[in-house]
Image 1 (cartoon, rainbow, N blue to C red):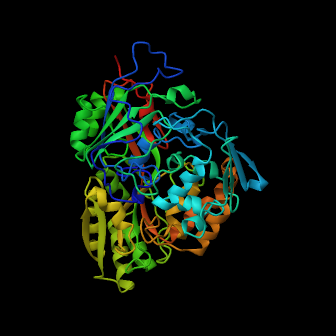
Image 2 (tube, one colour):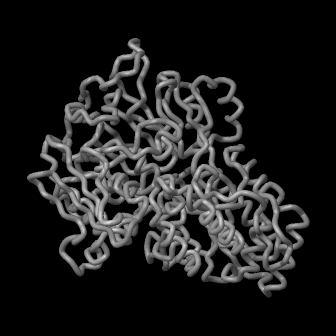
Image 3 (tube, rainbow, N blue to C red):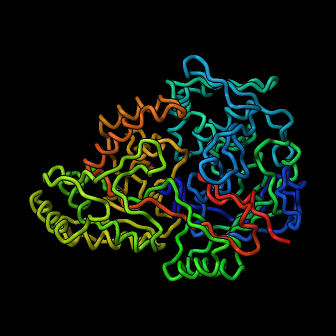
Length: 575
């Protein structure tokens, strides 16, 4: 989870924010709520103040029904609470789904086809408007009309969602809501084991019925959360202001926030970002950014009481367009996999990735282990992730390119400008040239990279991306290999893989409830080995994220949440 951590490549639109004070729920710069319930036993600290945050890439949108990158969701999950959400806790405990605006976890019936939940009473949006049960179906309908990049999570699971999106129905037939009782009922097309996680997406965070079915990136709608978005400046900054209404709802497990405001500034220079936190002029080095090599040792020695590396459920990879030459040829894909030294890329990442060749990170159920099954077409067996890219591998890769008749084939590899991602692709480019391709680099600014590579009109050949968990389930990661994720815009399957074996396995295993995942671990692991043997993409590292704060923040009680990263609602400024 680096530049656009979660679903890094899934940006749905370029940022188009304009300087504006939100029309909804503006309570003034000095607004503050009551002290958080269950305040940590550190009486020396008083709630209040403004948290100064640096972020390397701007959110593609702060509209909850549009934003899907980690930068978007890091903010939105504190502003738009869904029916279900995640525990505000560090480590594996943070993967736990808890009730949000619902009174309890849903009741599941009809063999896993029906989910029933009840909305809490007395809820209001940040602008004072009462929350209604019917706002939930409206919110999901808005997801589908506005163009959220993850919309297939809904269209492939909820009855009638696809028909609504296609304009064949006026509502989503599979969702009903009773405003009098607060009851919400959802019918699924088939059992889906991780559906509670789907309900916990910030995109399912309720907005008022009647909210325009158009992108509100410059003026995000009101929500129900500890904070509200008050003003945004394009590619420069945005502000979260404390929502004074939220503390009165007394929702268990959801902090009401300590600081009065979170001021987020886009700082594309990672050196400056790191130095500012070291100097305490900024309070956070964003979890989606990579510490520059020159600063790693300094941070480890000078800020060891306010820094820790956090292992993420996230994978860096180079995608290869499997429908366009040369990578529509398995020999070309194998050659590219052989030529890449994962250790060299680890060095480029300042040690902040662990060399890898399988896609699923070790913490995700079904992750595979053992040698990399690269080399099947050439009959050369398996390799370790750390050993790939040796001179012998380069020589073999060159022979494979020649054997396939692809020597001299032009290749353009795509990257965003920010480091170390540009350095990753520069290395890939050099290795592709070394094995016989005629490769060049296309560098795009951070704000337009994701929507550009996700366009079928561009149809790019190769480039860098990453996937970080939406939720701790292998089915989430396999979104990038699912043929249903291939779209003309905001494409989620950059490899353009449509493999019948992968499809049938995903559809079958996705029905397994999350609680029963251990029973199908071997089947997911087998799929991992199958995918790696096809060389569909070049997986090269599992990510490590810096949890690095200023001396102004109580580091001991601040939470690094495994799904959303730095949990600003738990950050408390020292008095």
